[in-house]
Length: 386
Image 1: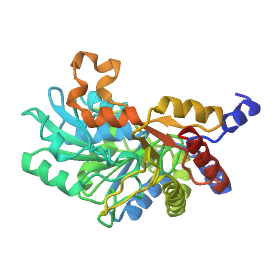
Image 2 (image 1 turned 180 degrees about the horizontal axis):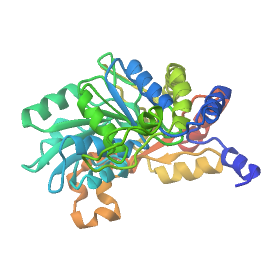
Image 3 (image 1 turned 180 degrees about the vertical axis):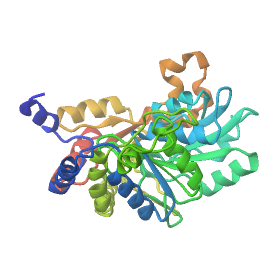
């Protein structure tokens, strides 16, 4: 791709854009000059900083949040024949992680206001085969973690928190990832911090994280860095199989600088969300995001629901495109994807999921979105609903 073609990627207001400057470049250059590019000391430093930010715990980085969830499922014992409950209103990556573990994804409906999975819907779909629940803190908003933990414990089911979109969000005053259950994060450019691709698992169980670290590195008993430090005198052993899910020091160098900026990112996203809220909160045809009192939203995305209108998300997105603004459809139901056609699931079983998907769309939100751009977006939406 040429420089001109690259510049065309951002010749409009995009849905999301990573915020980076010379600091990230300097970090990457330093890693290149060190001669150690793969998973190593900078990755270890990044993992330590994630733990410190979240308020404790042990961390293993991975090459995506999908593989982080897969490792978490594997290390709680999920295997072929098991079932894992996930929200129906979520991305395919959650289902992929379950399928990679050999288990069957089972879909639960969501709360129509928070878009998150909740106990009443999970209770309808669990069976004797249910091994785990993956709750998704959807688009930056924490689930009701205490009720989910209590339910999972009462049923003897494992609970994993997918906080892919929600690094920096809080539940009852504590950062996500610090609530006594394994949690995963994503570092995709649409998420809270960006390293290109990448993910992480955080847990209070050090043995659990150490197993994840072994399995992310093909099952080797010692890391490449340990062998390098010992000038090749150590020989790794394989007591388990594994995967190549490794993070790199190049990514970690970017991640360290991004994590330093996360408080600023959170502040800017909240300001943009507040601006949108101020314009749309009294709109007769639009519902702004609902935020429970005990939750601190990170606003990785900003999603509006259409009510009492013949305007569709398709029309909004088309007209916004014509105005050089990139929006997106809301999250779509997994049970409607062609891959799951053999499951023979009905829309009637997931009324909230279907309703939210049919009526929602995302607006651009990211640090660096100017007030002028925000107001243009607001005006453009307003014109569509006149």
